[in-house]
Length: 529
Image (tube, rainbow, N blue to C red; front, side, top):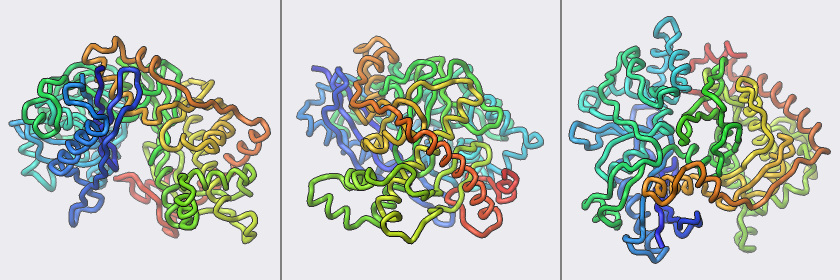
């Protein structure tokens, strides 16, 4: 048999995942990694190129060993990664600097760029690329020009982190639209660079690498990469893409109007748009899909999975011990406890991520509102259910924003990622949105989408979209409980009003924001309320 290898570089770890041609996951090698904060550079998160390549090679070895496969069994490879992270190379094609997606060093540069053309530059960037400046590449490049001119002068090419992995394997440098689109320098219509944006920002436009579509052949594994990774020299290396877009491919979310929620550390609500359109309010980002000619509206809920992990580790030591003794997952135990709490969680209201406001994006201080001192009603089970309900409410708010400017209405949702492992959470999401929710068998949709791209590039599959639809399998479907619909509608309205008041406390300097977009000054935040 032939097998496909997906090399998936996430925010917190690198994974090598092997699939057979039916889409069945065979093996995975995984290693956690950390991004480096530079002393005296607030918000910096540099990407350790040397160490992280060694970890990637280790994961490939682990996956091959776990699957009991030879290198010759791997028919093709593709790479995917967190978006926004960028890598710079010198004229010899050697990487010289990289940062992760969470790098937020360029706050001053974001503010400077916002002021160009009488504060119209960011609007122009958004209309062309679907991105605002806060997470884009241009402020980071400007920061390098200001603070590390030695690196900036040497830089001859820029790619994304997935492209760096592919280059380490093949020696070839290129970017794909789905990931490079998050730089804010790619045109949604042409799916190619818009050098004029860099010119307007006072940046060099001579470092833009070739653009190749996801699923096209890039090159093959070099002798050096084969020696380091354990792969066979000459194995095809295919263009991959951004994690969310490849995740949608792995879920079969490839047609206009289809909608998915990817529930991981951050939650993404993704809608395939029937035509290229941006949000007049600039609240929602627009990205190129891996499907050629298609774009996606994407909203983000911040720290959703991370908040659940914090709650588990900070307050649920007893449940962790019990789960270990029972041989189950702590989250599964907490969900079982929370299932006995009535819908509405006795009015407890979590304040963590806000709905997305891409242009002026910041959060209130993390808190729980409306607690009581009744231990029968206000306890760990109630707080856990309240967090799950709140995540669904934020998702519903974000989907409403997308529907409002795009005109797309939803008839169902696909729910994948770590959040989809919980039956209670899936049911709550269905109840809050009023939509049927389908959960796939393969939870690792991003790696599957990446493997599909590898197969298409090697000629083992005919078409990205058709293969994604054919390989996805469904585990469960949840339908909304009508008895909860009115309750959750009222909860959503109350939460929106309370959150606005909580933002006012941040604006007054009385509380500290959970997160604020780079370059967004407090006076700008105050103007939003």
